[in-house]
Image 1 (spheres, one colour):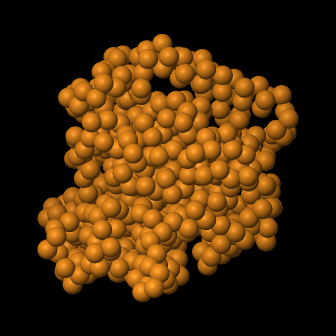
Image 2: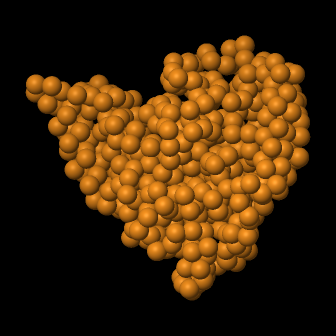
Image 3: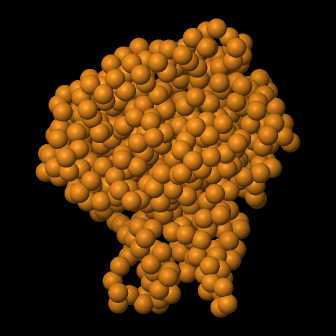
Length: 538
């Protein structure tokens, strides 16, 4: 930020709408707001502007409300934000008052006054609903905040609204369209509007890419943070399971679920994650972490790649030449930054470790949904997964116009968490993905991290046939293991973003973020979306 920008010019930048008329048949349906000077700042830049008195939390919040108005339901109609918090400006006003209090000014931390969007499966005890995109929960309010929301409020974040998602976090059907929910409609990829935003944290990733908020939170069971982050050309981080509490998040799997940041800058991911980290008696898995929270910011240095042994997963390269070319360029960048590449390495038991995953998810979904509803939304008309299925059937015209709910029905048919099929599947998944999989590979090659393309290019939105099968990447085994996985931009092919994945064993979250930061600073691949109608691919 220029030191000469005063408060008036900052406010003007905040309200400016720059027409992005592309002047061709590939132009967006309407002129769209470009990035202003304000939109180019990361959280540290925004915080510096507020500290210097050039910007207020109220002005910042209004700016993003204006962007949401221009991009979400009008213009390209991204449908990334499913609901706005009517109290957001009041929260911002109160935080401004804290900052400027004459006798006892208070700054809660680096998120003070920074707006945050939350995926709509994260409970907030306010005027917004928490629905996982389902009409069965529309209009209902959680009785208390999710643990991570409590921590964000304490850190001074402004809870701006909720983001759309693949309904029930993409566990309803195997023929779903990522980013579609019966409550929110179809979220659109801001880079190429007819391409999938991927899911299930579609709205959070789209909102980050279009800068509808400086920070967004997604959740992942297997790919639901990293896949949409790649498809939308932003940073997504799935932390070690247990680093963040899952209490108050509509669940799929107690073994694999976690929340995590989806943002435009790696440092912002670390800041957001740091604010949410903490043990919680309501989520016993968090009690396995160190008593001292990790410092996720200290290692964010440009030299972080120097001397690090990085395994190259060539099996992760999809059958797409453009992606392969970008990956080779990324490897060159890693070498130039002093990394020692171990090329190639192979993850043992990659396929075997995932064979029991579906059984684990089905059993845990049935149990988890009932427990969440009882604890957070006890006034809902549905109390169990069976109730959800029955409600959807009664309202099929609205809830199932494109695909059914066969996966929910499979989960309802399971027989509890003491079932031998579940216990065997869970034990095999953990053993094969951890000790006999990722951990064994890291020990054999003395690795600090591994890298590979995150996935293949985003396919077209198709409500008739659903999502195209994915290809490439190695994220699934890290999801099964519960280990940290970062994706960040490494370029584009035909206007579609491509992500680089960096991953490591449990509790190495700070290291993964540090390596990602060093790559980001050396490569600078973040590109604002152009809202194209179609790709530049033949």
